[in-house]
Length: 157
Image (cartoon, rainbow, N blue to C red; front, side, top):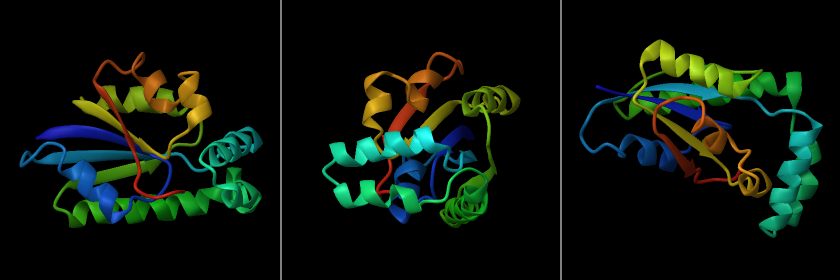
């Protein structure tokens, strides 16, 4: 069985589930999902800049309405549970947890703990972070010791 750590920032859509569960053809895959709820004000600014870069000005304005920090934990727990159920419904094994601090340290620890074969980072585009190679996938490639695949989710957070 192939073991993948899947880092996400929101609930998986049905298209996302199909995308990640078909990456290895007919080989069975066990997913270990890590979800980090929304962060702080600095994260909000970066998301707003990404929205503006995509021409989504309405989304940039709505960033203020999105729960963050402790307020986002409940939303994150629900998103994780929905994602795990969707992966299981597709026939995959799936377990997961929320990560609150130091996501890359949590990722590295999990990869070592379960002997993961790969890491899949599935997020919305984050142009500012990607330009400076500060996004999860770019930073994880130097830290985890297994292949890291970066994919873009099929819906906006």
